Amino acid sequence: MAQKVLLKVSNIDVFQGTFQALWDISLEVRSGEMLALIGANTAGKSTLLDTISGLLHPTKGKIEFGGKDITNLEPHEVVELGITQIPEGRGIFPEMTVIDNIIIGSYSRRARYKKDENLKRVYQHFPILEKRKKQTAKTLSGGEQQMLVIARGLMADPKLMLLDEISLGLAPIVINELFQALKEIRETGITILFVEQNVRRTLQEADRAYILETGRVTLSGTAAQLREEEEVKKAYFGI
Amino acid sequence: MTFLTDLSAAILTGIFLGGLYVLIALGLSIVFGVMRLINVAHGDLVILGTYFAFFAMTGELFGHAFAPFGLDPILSLVIIIPLLFGIGFVIQKYLMRRAFEISMEAPLLIALGISLVIQNSVQLLWTPYSRGLTAPYALQNLSIGTVHAPLVYLLDFIAATIMVFLLREFMSRTYLGRAITAASQNKRSAKLMGINIDRVYAFAFAIAMITAAVAGVFLGLTFPFTPTSGVSFLIIAFGTVIIGGLGSMLGTFIGGMILGLAQTLGGYFAGTTAQMLILYVIVLVVLAVRPQGIFGR
Image (cartoon, rainbow over all chains, first blue to last red; front, top):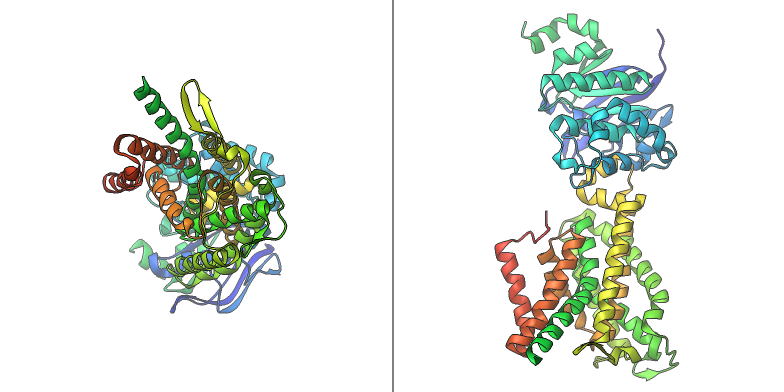
């Protein structure tokens, strides 16, 4: 089944100050898929997402999105092209209301035209946000805040959504709700790249995955393949 | 009876005067709220606006009146606002932006430098002597029953209310205003929403300059000024923002009222020499008891 390659990362090195966080990383995100990036805390997953988003720039290598070279673009330019990141730790605008948080998501020129259409869709995915729309964002529960930032990301009308550890600190019921919403979002045609530490859960939800260890890709494949991999079993399932 | 009348006058005057302090403090509050920078050049930028208005009125340079334009200070805002807006935009985009990349302290030093440049340039252009924007209405008194107050103080209050209202509407209803608010609450998330932080900072600084222009004109109408007046008013502006809480516009408004009242009531009960002392003491008390200010976060 040949899928179109949406995002292509080729042999990038990324430094955080003088510390090399990513070593010769290559990966592909295919159109319409749900791709996972798995790894421990210091593996470099967030660094990779930040580099794709333009917050960091590689010292070597190339990043292409829809065939276009985005390696050295600024964050707002990357958003304009159709990549949004749902950052780790949620990153709400705490003193703004829910509705204001959501609307600022459609700041980019392209997204502004589709504001009303996307707002309707967002409320369909997350009805609780419509209910709480006048509340100040910081008064929301952890799970609701996570929904808020996903909603905000959707307003940017993305083709590719990057999600950094959305399950952190949330109860299993809430995590289920979130992944259900992600399935629905993916069905509307948005490609999803998500980063998680919880391997078992991740391999249930993802089509394919890359495993990162201390800044390098050590394994990749379909979820089914990875579940069978001896190394994965040993390292993450304790078998 | 005169006691109550005089006290009423002191209270009224205090509230109105507070308006001027709010006007001056607004720009400081915006820049700190958005960029976490204490713009020590703010007072001088306000005074620069005052001197622009002075020039528009008297056409005076180097001690000689070349072409007395006689332009009314409030009307001259039409020119001064775009002028200071442009200056602010340039300062942020070309000076401050690079300074932010260098270190946390660099912008503070740049602001100090700008402060010195302004003070000395103004002194060169318009002499160190005390000046005033002597528009006819600047000398009139307002009478409400038996209570008298200078008319300009009321104008200060009206201007402050209008500015605060306009700013709040801008911040909450326009995309740029919301972007500025968002950037001040979470810079990283703002970037991830497609907000161009450099542009937002430049606009925030420029908006602060608009308020500085208005503040400058009304300051000149209310009080006499010299090239170094900016510093004393910076201190009052700083106090206003501290009392109200950094980042809150409503807080700045209330802070201004409190300081205006502190000054006039202090003067009423303890004499005019104690006025400013009472004002500073109140700032100190707030800093000691509730450092984040009334509405601070």
